[in-house]
Amino acid sequence: MRGILTISLDFELHWGGFEKWPLNERYKNYFLNTRRCIPTLLSLFEQSNIHVTWATVGLLMHITKGELLEHVPQVLPEYEVKKLSAYNYIREAGIGENESTDPFHYAGSLIDAIKKVPGQEIGTHTFSHYYCNEIGQGSEQFRHDLQASRSAAVAWDVTLKSLVFPRNQYNPEYLSVCAEEGIQIVRVNPIDWWWQINGTQNESMWKRLNRGLDAYMSIGGKTSYSLDAITIESGVFLLPASRLLRPYRPKEFVLNRLKIEKIKKEMLVAAQNNEVYHLWWHPHNFGNHTQQNIDGLVEIANHFRRLHEEFGMVSRNMGEIAELLYNGAQT
Image (cartoon, rainbow, N blue to C red; front, side):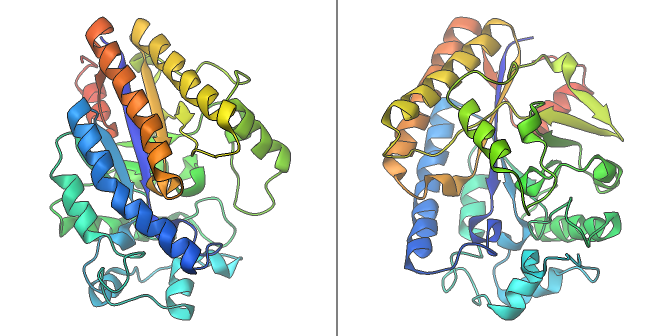
């Protein structure tokens, strides 16, 4: 077996934070920049033979508002915190009729572009950016959400195999639902305690501080692992995340450099030991300081090419890793 680089992206646009991001000029420019950089990312992935899972919010996968509303589940989450519901947002704030009038809530042209690039997988980030650890929802509501995602994906000739839980709210009780709805593999959080996320409300500052520090210095555990270490629960493979690629920040010049170097060192360890290294971020993390973020990713991609040449490291998306595991883990 050779080392594997896998990348998963939480593809959500405004659906990833509608309850906290007002669509003022600042955020409109942020998401428009995000959209403009996606073709650049796809070109880089294709040139570098990097395979990526685009875990996509199902609401993005529509051409018109009418089509979107047809896929809304009949059984909805009833969050205690009402503002967390995408359906509440649609009722109260409203959305446009299509992608041309509302590029923040529709992404058909981008999904089409992703599908055309070899090695890119469309996975699911649930239909409505569903929060699996919030009060007021349960497994049956989650099931209906996944079914809506599957229905939306059919129009794109996509069979959903991979899932990323929104806000990293991993809920093991929902794995059996995932398996029953065709999901083969999910991204789970690193083992460090600061990545155990129980909800969107009142998370401690200490936890968030440790998550931030770990991006720049080694305070957490080992980030790569063997394919043999990937476990299966309730019929679903659990693929741990290794590292969040944090966005560039102008005031953190030294830290920006440390972040990239840390990722490259961890990738080297994975390549040398024939292990899996799982990098993730949100495409909208590149919405500010886009060129600097792309420059950092280019450096990571070039490093992957060197590791491929020296150690034979390859890239596989989440669905391909599930296939490897089903077929005896031969890369």
